Length: 243
Ligand SMILES: [Zn+2]
Image 1 (cartoon, rainbow, N blue to C red):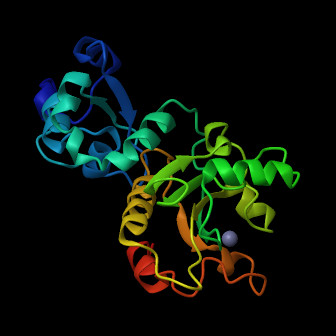
Image 2 (cartoon, helix red, strand yellow):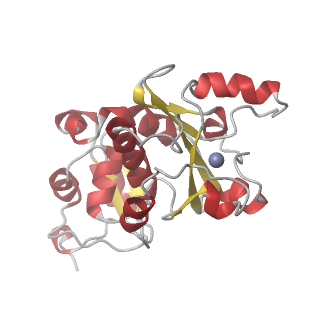
Image 3 (tube, rainbow, N blue to C red):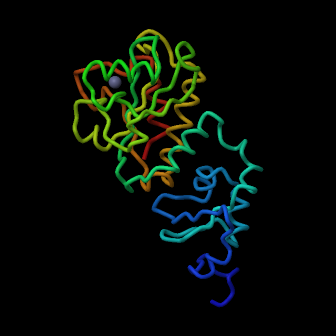
């Protein structure tokens, strides 16, 4: 087909021509939707469609999409929860092995004090040479902001976690720890909002090239722990992250 408008594909020559200075290119992977890609890059579906001259929202694996640049991005900055912006920015700068992260493992810290920085020091003192055993920590408002997402050094270095006994789950699981003891209380609204925003984004598949399965510590290390506590919303989370 000669007409560009009639084809969802852009050849590399055309790509070079339509790409602006601050544009990026996303290659569609299995599980991607236009909506998820738009959220990942903080642009609108409309802007994505316009830039790539898509007649509808159909995309195919391997298709290259030009992500509109900074000027378009500013317009929809509010579409991304601000708590997630640093995570998205930091993760974009990383080189992630596609399909490495097959699981997301939820934890609680079991205590109300602490933050990513504090647990990092604690874990180093306990002999974890890579520090903080989790990839992300979500604060409870005491030693870090309520719902604040701290990015652990292991995520920035894209290395295995040390949060479970299973080697497979440490190697392929993203460890997310919510500060608090959910044997004693419910997860706060703000913490849960940040947690679901983070997991939604990680599972939107565009950043990782795969949709990681959701699990929790006690299901991985059976009979060894109650983590993340009896008040963690297991049913709601499994329903949300089923398949
Ligand atoms: Zn745990």
